[in-house]
Length: 193
Image 1 (cartoon, rainbow, N blue to C red):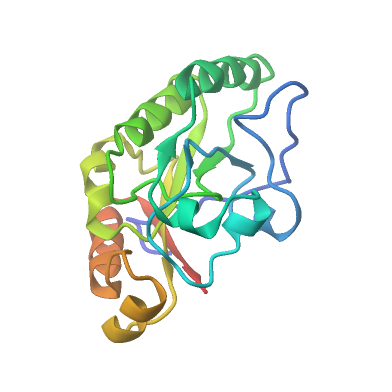
Image 2 (cartoon, rainbow, N blue to C red):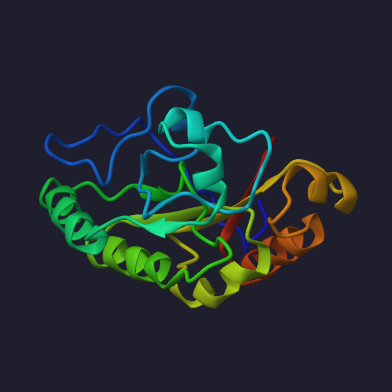
């Protein structure tokens, strides 16, 4: 492995701490992405025609596609959960997000606050996004020895992406973000969908 790469390894699946719902261990195949997850928003706005989330969280697709909305009192609840994970000595990565995109089209200040809270409580961070270079505003928070950045790619063709992911960043923009994070020494990966 080249000197500038750090391998992030998940040794064993994490378990959710009882009473925590803002930080949780993903179930099923989702656990391959990260041992823990958090979802600061409800809805997304990238308008991906194939998205499973509206059905999974029982929200109308039109409402989901209208844009991401911060979950009420999110930071307060996240901090409470993060303290419990810290007290238990759990330091795994927490991935944002399974039910939204941390770098959606609207205000993503909550994403940055979420990453900061997780780090303040000893947790690693990982983001999975179709937001492309919008994620660069938080590059300074990512630690090469600890965190990772990922992007979902469904195609390298802009017209395909525009048809199926109408408001997501174009593939080249996502790849540009991956390159910048990689150049900063952050472990990067791609979810091929």
